[in-house]
Image (cartoon, rainbow, N blue to C red; front, side, top):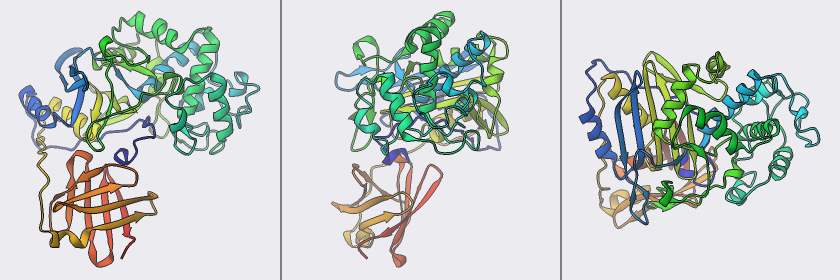
Length: 445
């Protein structure tokens, strides 16, 4: 639930399932323009679609820097979060190709004195597949919010990973771990004697001729970099993560055009015969640094990413490539933006969203809904208030979000993809968001 999670880093990949339509029509760029016109103000960033290697749609909205009114362009640099893992995985598999390491090598070969639990059992391949059991330190529980925007050394990061412990025996299951990919970045640095950023440039960027991809630096909008913004309480400038705190797991910067070029090169064997096939080999639906995407009966590969206020995704479905980079968004990047682009490319029907002004109500009508509700499931409270006869919600420690009425007991916040249904007889509400359903019980009944 990204709406309630503004301090934790959202770096996990995701799968998208497109809704089916009964009729197919030619691609209509004007209608897709209408969609993006509708979400302008709810999305800042750049998008691109290519079919058979030719661009069929490209657009940028909003500002790279709100404070100085610097608009986004197709060349604006966006941090792409966990898409960095695809770059890291590729470089690991290139090192395997060159005989510098084996997928069966154990972690203790590279960190013999680090006291990482199960290091003698964990293989490089298990880390690539998120099956190592290495605990993810990119969480509030591990204090990530206290050090993510400060420079970090390898020794500091490895010590944190070692202290965080293990979640399960290596190979037993899959649990997404940014920590594992940080360790892979350090392994690459050890193998080559160069920094992660130098390796991204030397092994991927320059050979492929990417023009706007690099390992993150201090953000400077005058050099084409986007700042990121949080939608809670209006667009609020997000603090920048330090690249050393997310090395190999979330530190790469790119653009939609570069991401599509990168992905096509992977599929075409540019980086070596069989490497893309290795990255696409799946265990429980996950590849090595990539994951599955679906549209109707078609399947492709790609990755999602999120860091600070940035969100990004790239994938292919058949002969069509999609890429989205955003520095401010309060609609769902997968369920709304990506799926709409897929519908448009396939010629299937889709609706244009309407973001109405929150309605006012008679205070007596909404008084039964006000109060504080708590969820054991989410360990979170939501306060429902009457603000000048407008119903609003506010999660613990977050800004208020306005609610529009759907029925006498159901309300929605389109910007956050939230629906709330009240059950006053049982003093509870149910919150629906991004496919999840969460029950809250009123505390002050």
